[in-house]
Amino acid sequence: MIFRSTILLFLILTFAPIANAQDASKRNDRPQATSSPAPQYAQENKKPADLTRYSYEFTQPEFVIRHIVIEHDSSGRGRVTFERHGEETPIIEPVELSASAWRRISGIWSELKFLDSNENYQSPKSFAHLGTYRIGMDDGKRQRTAEFNWSNNKSAWALANEYRRVADQAILIFNLNLAREMQPLNAPQLLNEMETLLTRNGLSDPQQLVALLTELRTDEHIPLIARNHADRILKKIKK
Image (cartoon, rainbow, N blue to C red; front, side, top):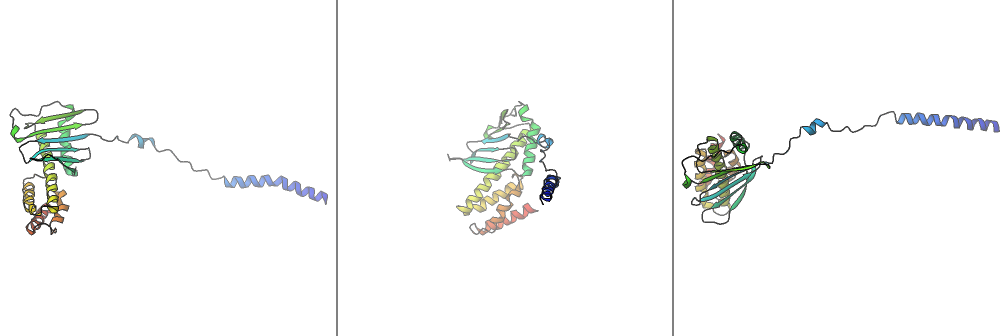
């Protein structure tokens, strides 16, 4: 009995480590997944944010809108500030250039090579009574502002006209929203102004007015003549 017990204990002690090793090898036969680092080229291709700021300013103290300032970033988002003749408090509204308007405007800035140039855009003839324009750019390292009241440089003059369209559209939207809330009888006159600007290509992007016109044509707070006019303008824009 003692002999048999000794042999049995010997066999247990001999084969137990082997079985444990086999089990361990079965459990560890699959390699552990390791997280691979992000490809370096993805980080290298990351472009730094464009922090360039653009500005436009118009001043003519005798005009109804005597002072306008537009400031925006490289995505076309910013604000418009304007002051009316006889009023001291400026009105500040958000502004966002549409994709098509920003393509036109950014293209003109590129044509001018504005920060690399020191060209004086003022024409030999002065038309100061029509107002003074200032255009400016600041890329964080360099900044420049140019002033003129009339220019023979086609790109500089085209840029001033583009920003004037942005300002006229933004001010028109503000006035229409104000009319809906407080001065409904002003709506017909404002819609006449909108159609005039639309006809002479005086708006930055008429498509940005679609949502507002859609609301105006069913807004019972404004006169019926204004609602019908909004509907006609909307159809004209959608053509």
